[in-house]
Length: 386
Image (cartoon, helix red, strand yellow):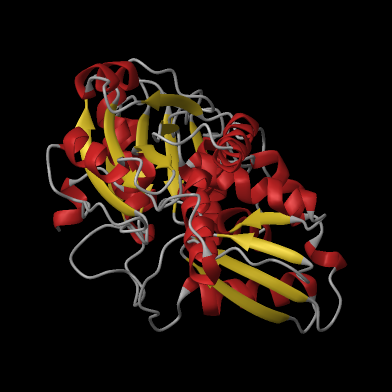
């Protein structure tokens, strides 16, 4: 349960420290965090892999601090270290360039200029730090920084403090034991943040709960379901609407759709759904999950999503499964991305942009499972018809 008491990495501001070897990045990271999280040495290339530490910087909030290897590393292994360091930019909101003493050399200037161009292209806020500068002053500057491409809230535009949010959370063989999954926890927490009422139930209790709320005079109910229960929930709401005309009172969405709207481009995902029926036999579909977890019986990514795709496309497809930071999409005819609760908005937008540049349609779990269940999006707020 410990991870539910901490802000997940995906909801933290990512601050990464870059520079040449021996510029003092690790020393600065240790001073910045107040802990010895990075090994410090006079030997060039001591830091070989990105090292991260979670901390709180007020008023910026929860952050993830990352130390990286020097961008002037050499040799075949050095090139791999540089690549891993630059990959950190995919999730960085703020970059700190630690100025080295010998940066006046032509090669070093070139590395720095290319780095700054990449940072500017990605719209990442950039600070510079010199050894004589104050660490506390750097903290103050970062704390006051305006983050480009800031993540909207899950319920922006769709719920207020007068909304009663019903979270439909099926408990089946793939549900983790003894806890809720992260999207469910984050949605409930946001209800608390905005002052909305929240209820949690399984599918079989949904009709009884809605009737109770309507009888109590509730005027604005939002049902947010696990995508796997779309068909059953849709049937329950359609039945109630026929009997009680609830369409204007009870709205429907899903955890995955709300995350797609918060972290990426809902319209792009909806467009990707339309391409599923254009797939041909033996086409390659990439199924990408932002986290890594033990695969269980009837796993959504490796079992339910492939079944849904083959049902909707009526074709026999090939599948490639990716997890964590892996996003190797070459040769794919379609990408199906998970809800992205462990990915930052910056990383999700990068994935969408990679797909667009490669001319590969992309959609997410919720949109796909909704499509199989006959769900149609009403609007870009994430509401769906029933």
